[in-house]
Image (cartoon, rainbow, N blue to C red; front, side, top):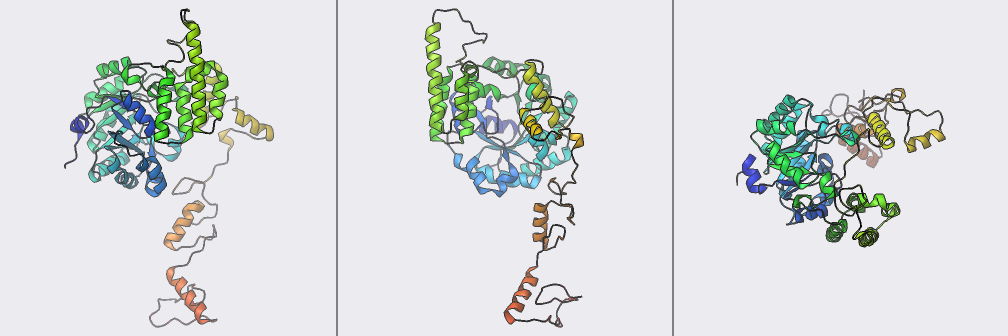
Amino acid sequence: MAKLQGFEFWSRTLGGARHVVAPMVDQSELAWRLLSRRHGAQLCYTPMLHAQVFVRDANYRKENLYCEVCPEDRPLIVQFCANDPEVFVQAALLAQDHCDAIDLNLGCPQMIAKRGHYGAFLQEEWDLLQRMILLAHEKLSVPVTCKIRVFPEIEKTVRYAQMLEKAGCQLLTVHGRTKEQRGPLSGAASWEHIKAVRKAVAIPVFANGNIQCLQDVERCLRDTGVQGVMSAEGNLHNPALFEGRSPAVWELAEEYLDLVRQHPCPLSYVRAHLFKLWHHTLQVHQQLREELAKVKTLEGVAAVNRELKLRCQAEMSRQQGEKPTSDLPFSHWICQPYVRPGPREGSRNAGACSKRALEEEEEGSTEVLSKNKQKKQLRNPHKTFDPSLKPKYAKCDQCGNPKGNRCVFNLCRGCCKKRAFKETADCPGHGLLFKTKLEKSLACKGAQLGLQEPQQPGPGAPPGGFSEVTGSALA
């Protein structure tokens, strides 16, 4: 059967999906996807998977995809981060039988993406992206899609989208923020960028950003003309967002915990989901916030959830007939959006976040140090965190880690070991000495025969010959 493309792929394979759950690291696992699908989501993405790790580690494949196959969990798009065409395609080939499309992450703005050279930090490398998409389009039996962030300029964003479409991308998700807009500096997503992209390409487009309720979804579809709308944080705080409902938190929390029992996942994922679902209530019941952070078992999490439910129900019964006093649009036990404070809202937190952003971007530091760094400075009063004063290390030519000072190949120890083993070469700087198979066999023969003196090379031996005892080349 021929591979479906563009709008035919969106309408037939994806069922014309308009309500989409975003790929979220450690947050869009199978149990959460199933919960979201029960409450209006029509398409889900896996969490972002690292292509290189997916290729080399069978356990990683098993834990993140192979063991999570579920008939209810379709249509499904698997997302990878990658910066090498061959590795991306190898990973995609291993995943394509378990999903409906493969997505290339070109939108992650976090520092881990900068260090690993993937996500939004590839958006200037158009030649590389063209090769990655083109090769995947040629080799895969399922379509390849992309999730991107915008450039400040609408015109450049449009050219970027057209380049990806021309390379073979069959569906494009556009997050209307730049890679600099994250954390406390997020700000509003630009639907104007998304609208311009939608008009300029002939493939389906999903919009991402500014989605906190069903009314936002409908307004985005109307204002931008996109085929679907993707939600991340809005979905985490209210999995029933696409239904247009704001149910009691415990209703969805209990349903999610039941799904986790059927489809287990790490406890850290579960705890993180409950922190978001109960976000507003935990501002009121601080003690239970600490208990939720400390529990070590799924039943412990469920017990905290039950206690939160009982306290909220008791508060509901007390408030019946009373005038609401909360500043929130609804009572705190109702699923509702969380608006991230900007850098000017809440000066204490904003200062810390702004400082972290500055540190991460290596643009300097501020006088305010984090608690962890303050502890380090107490232990060592002379310690400095000024990046300009840190020693600069020469980087490994292959992986970017600090290279060995005396490595003859300009590599770190790990890469040097791989090269020395592969090329049967020695690196005296790292002290890595390897013998070829011929040298090992000659040495083994010499040991068996008990030869003590170097043997003269025979007429068929290569120039210079070898010592059968030592396996080293003779002068």
